[in-house]
Image (tube, rainbow, N blue to C red):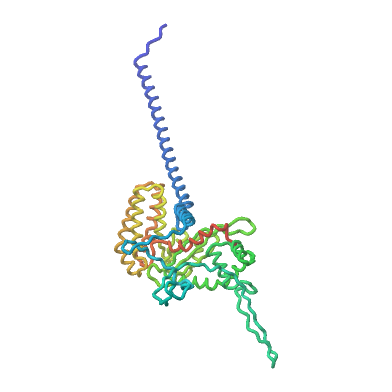
Length: 465
């Protein structure tokens, strides 16, 4: 039997089947393309975030800062040194009075330094040409900075004994007070050792090597024990500084990590070093600045609450959540750090500048230009300038952060930086209503910077035991 020819219905059914298969294939392809597009977008976002982190690490490790010289400046110093060593002294050309010469100002050395005056008289008391008498008509002077080598000396105290011929009583001068009982270091020597250790960040073994080079044989353990005794002598002064500091109306605080040795474990605890600074010189105050430091085991708000017990005023600090417990009572007001907001935006702007970051950076820089002009003025004048000039800039900056932040994904880094400012805006805005306050917490950061730089010279701090 011959096969029956397909009917029109069969053709229509096959066409419908093929159309359904093509439609299903198109849907699968579209879903796959959408999935690939999402994966590419996620990969691009991840690459962007990783690149930002790499840029931050590179800038932190290799970028220029106040403690580092750029590579170009180091090369310039090497070139200047090589040039000075290779080129002999050249005789300067004689310039006529009629020639136009730009006279460079002569920088005087510090007049408070000790001075040694050396007068160089002519070798002949008469004129070498005709033998006539000489009369004074003036003098030429020049200054050079000289170094008097540091020298260690032994202070030998002799107390002669005398006896009375009448009553046989022994008379002798009392022994001078010592910094450490039966110790061999004077007050000046202890001050030098402690300043070298915590001021210039020289470990005790380096100090022992430097002293040995000058003929002083002293063990590192002796230096460590002596520093501990000296710290005990300074306790009354330290406690008095803390008492005076807590009476001020404004305190800056900041902290940094402090690895603390755990005895008999070979490990370290996560400690923190806190700095508290009372410095109102920027607002024209004549009170001397006060700074004290406190080491704690761990980083918690209770440490700050204990240290600032009894303080009432404004605490300028960063956005650490541990400070929030201090602000609940109302006696302490929090003032935020505008430099932290600028730093978060600058990290993004330096890696990938955009219109958003550029505009935000320009607004913050305009605020700081005004602050530079009014630095050192009395609080009333600073407050008047901020009301008339700074407040419009701050309000415009807030509108920009809120408007542009609402149009961004909350996962975007620039949106997170903007949110850091908008969530703490009342604390950021505090300096506009008090001429004594600062827009940032750089006073505390500068006070603790020496410790963070010197931390590279050691691995951990001793334990509290």
